[in-house]
Length: 263
Image (cartoon, rainbow, N blue to C red; front, side):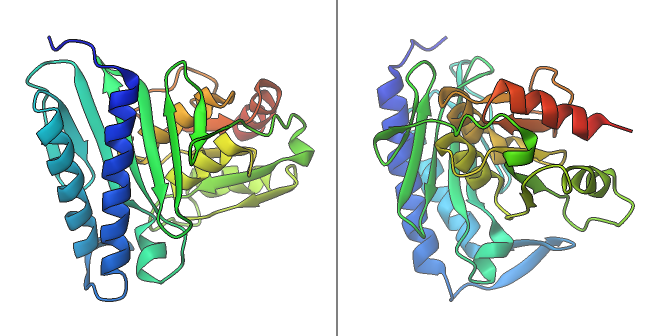
């Protein structure tokens, strides 16, 4: 098993890799081609170029670490301990339409437990970072959740599945919360939604359709900023399961969870 690595070294590596990937996305914007991975699920050369850059940089520094990335990257950890969970472009549909709400997300696991992450928004040059027990920062300055408690005062974000049908349970959950919260929105980037919960710009976010790379870094951000992350029913969050509820406070968490589960 590989020796323990200082959190600062891991977060610094994630931050540098995220910024490099963000520059690649900026360079590719407007000149890429698009193909279909599935219905309404777009992928670009930018995704692959950004992921390759992240993988190369981190593997060079940490050759004994494992990787899981959105664009077909899966490498077990030779050292059996650390794994990097990478989304090189979260918010692909936004990106290809020129809508500036997308991000690079890099999460870090230690023996299966999420311990840190970095999320970089190239459009605003905002870097969100967090390490277990060390809080959450935005461009190096500490941030916390809003602490909002009443559901009626909360701004929430929801993530709906790709190619959602009108009879999908996710639509029903969205409609349940719509009249109860102050507002409910859909942004197209789970990574930025979690970042915004962490820094107090929004108060909660839920989804039943995410992949590990969509959530890994953001979950650490929210927890370290004082928020709560579980499954929608309040059970323990699992990064390998597409079930997440992240909120700014325990009280709000209870209200949102109850509303989502209500018949």
